[in-house]
Length: 145
Image (cartoon, rainbow, N blue to C red; front, side, top):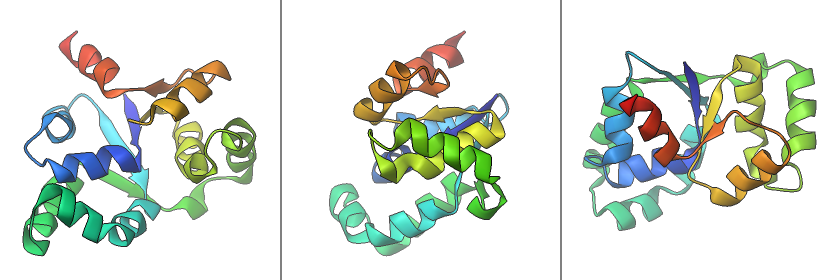
């Protein structure tokens, strides 16, 4: 199964590199294929100080945590996503959170589930009939089956 990982999941996994989210990504890499947008690297860099403050990790520890986690995630260049997926993603997500258009477009393009911790995005997409979206609790449940 293919899963596109939203920025908030990666941020949280890095903030608690020994927690559930990291365990899911690292521990289930044989069952699931994780993808994200290259844009995520920019987002992490932009919020690096916030990540340091929340995680209480040093720059070096964050770098190590990223290395360990990113080995299990394929980073996709957004330029390869055909326009039709961008248009569909924009229509679906524009009134929920335009910042998530890239992740929705990527999940449409890859025919993958979108894994997010954003409950507003989750409910909004579900209400619009976008069924390939999961919260961590749902993903953990799938892993147990």
